[in-house]
Image 1 (cartoon, rainbow, N blue to C red):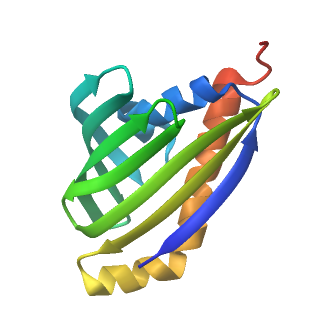
Image 2 (cartoon, rainbow, N blue to C red):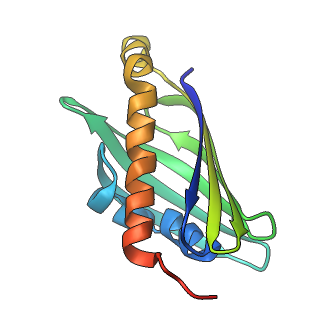
Length: 151
């Protein structure tokens, strides 16, 4: 039931940001609450890139792994993420990238529910703070790797 929408202006090329989000196995290096990431399958074609991946996330003693279906729709500059298996009843996550001169507007929408009602309640209390920290981590990583680009 936690839901959020975050928008950021980042001084990077749109494609660099898309590649950063799709580089799932590097998440544990810079994303808070992410302990492990593994890609099981990648299918790349003209219109989309599909990835099946596991993420192990948590905080303190609470850690769990969920499997997700990640799809980049190339013409839309959108990444859609849905859960396949794990501790979530559902996950709906959308990344939208819109380059405007030397800035890219990144919109991140997320809606999910944890199967464990107690953990879901606990998560709701700190959800916005956690999502902001994750967005900050993506932005910081992008700026470290790609800022001051030239067209």
